[in-house]
Length: 603
Figure 1 (cartoon, rainbow, N blue to C red):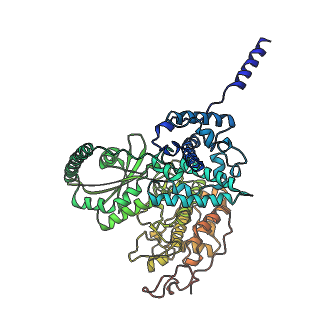
Figure 2: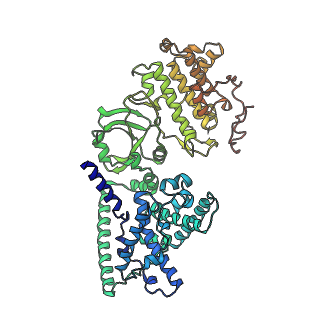
Figure 3: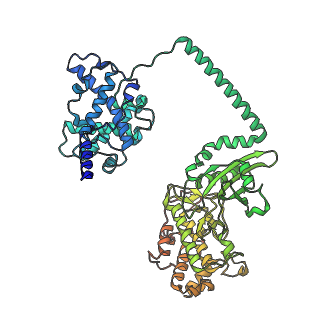
């Protein structure tokens, strides 16, 4: 019985407790807003001006409440009354009339949240569900005290209001006013990058007048100006001397010029949120044990690749470019710019880069990638790496296809890799494929062929139209992928030097011959046939033959090839090769003529 009596007393206390204002109103006396319009109220026009000013001041608190609680207005009448009483106390302490709030805000419902308010928008979530991103989100970024920026804001608010009112039936003057208030609160409380009390935006968005800034005394102005100029000169001299010493000891003329000219490319590639950093040479040398031979994991015409370990324990692979020249620097910059644009599980991730030049080591360029423990694909197919099972090979083929499909159609502008081969497919701990080495890659206009004067790539993987005419398209990457697919399925290299004088020298010719004699299964590495998925293996071989077709128009896109590999699309009948091969290329009639951005049927 006593327990019930205690509970009843608690309920009565809670019921009779006065509601509290959920807003912090201390800002009212701290902000330097101008209350002059409320000092002497003689008529209705004066009262209207004072009401607008007080509504703007109160709007700052509501905007802060929206930012903190994601709710546009106060939850109920009790909290609204408490806030208005508190607001009156604040402005009374500033010498204003003690009845201003009751005069200006006779209807407290304009500050209380309601499902009938402006199409039912009560919370930030409601706003996003009904309107989504709006022009206000971009128009409110930056300093709105600039007249042009403020003009852009007002135009954006008009567009949002028109869009908002278009969703509401029976729009009246009251609804228009409500929606306008919500748009202002969203602009200053959500879209605005400064705090709601910032003088930069409150004047533009809420129309709140501020007191003029007090001019400093002439002596103070002169003193602070001289002091600031002196400090600035000392700092500039210190920075200039430090930079001169650093540049003299660390950088040569070529390096300074390289960094100055290409700073925009290098700076744009630095993306800490994606883990892409600008390394200095000391960090790279420490990670690789000063480029120890024990850490050398690969080399080629571009230079050396070393394994390294960062202080946080992360394993990296460092590509040390062999030379610094106009050509090599363009390849370095091209790879930095391209790889920093994307992030995909089947594309090797760029962790950073470094540039340096000194008297000892000369010009230096470094690319830093994630270290993939299982090395390149060719080591497992043709080298001493562990033999790959059918499931692993299938997973590698699908992964490489997804990576290329992303480059061709997953980003804009599309990217052509131009050097797809087994050495450029790296394998992680789980034998997942990652397409690597983007030194020859190019960004292109979608659907446009890429014309080059100098052929680059690897023999055996080059598409005929590229090797003969210097024309590269997305189907040229598809051709290289088809050759790679046949290599993975057969364990045979793209160019078999043991049969150099035979018509089977090219893997594509060898696979074509077996296709025409209905012996496609003989393309498959005999070690995989034990898995029993012979029909799936034959499908993969057919896709490889179709992708590496000599005629551009008969090759599928990477997206189509991926669907065929995954069994989501039917493989069409593979057309015969054109004969003889020395016909006029379908893209051009003359090297000086314009390139057609399509793939017409061969003549």
